[in-house]
Amino acid sequence: QHIKDCGFDMLTLANNHCMDRGEEGLFNTIQTCKEKGFDVIGAYESAEERQKIFIKEIDGIKIAFLNYTYGTNAFAHGTFLENSYMVNLIQPEETKKGSIHLLNEYAQIREDVERIYSGENDEYLAVKPYLEQLERNIMLAREQSDFVIMLLHCGGQYIQEVDPYSIFITEKIRQFGADMVIGNHQHIIQSCDLTDGYLKVFCLGNFMYDHRVVCDGYYFDSPSYNAVLHLDLTKDETGKVEAEKSFSIYTTAFGDNGLPMAMDSADVFRIKNETYIKNQILSSANLFAGKQCYKEVEERYKL
Image 1 (cartoon, helix red, strand yellow):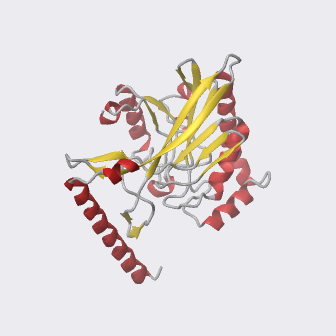
Image 2 (cartoon, helix red, strand yellow):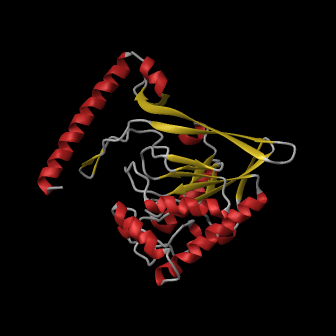
Image 3 (cartoon, rainbow, N blue to C red):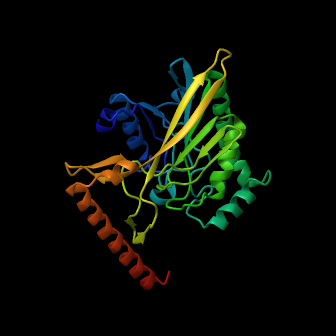
């Protein structure tokens, strides 16, 4: 409800955690989000619902939104989809033939991409139906709208360099007819690419918490800021849509009420109140603790 009250209208549910509580949990999540008044994409209650392209008309411009994920963490919880229509996937679930494991090393991911997509081998035949479904949906979206945006859940976590699979699949999405792809899953800001009007944003970072965290014994010394993408669409008398794109940079800080809030980076530098000073001290302490923790892990396990 708080997310709705903040002004969000749509939620993307195709992500690697959507099956953490199985299909029943996902079904309940979809229903709860709808009951709160959200438009929901990426996960569906029925096969019929999945066939419909979500299109939002804003000021006379029809915008199609699509949402896909690389996987559902099936390798971790062992729960695989029985009803394939429930989640939009760009490849088979983890551990199945044809899937790319994003926890692998960069070189291994690149080798897997080259091997799987080099020809009509068994692995490619396993992933081919997913690519065909992806292409069909983008083509339908293209036919029914003025502008197509893909919201993609893909990429290695806490890695600043874009992985080869993300580069490959975002290029496929361009070839299939999308106008823009906005990625997430990495938790930190990654690069973007603008070629012939097609914008690939691999990750905007997190929306509401610091990336410099200790997770499973690891400390991620990544930039403590995020980005917001602004998209201004205009349509001329011929029906051609022009897209003006810009970004703003922001970070998370504690307000006077002690609660975290997203703030423009320029505003953060202007704040001199006691709460912010305490926040900076706490942040510095967390950074020191994180580095010490990671140092001990390195020594213990000889990383």
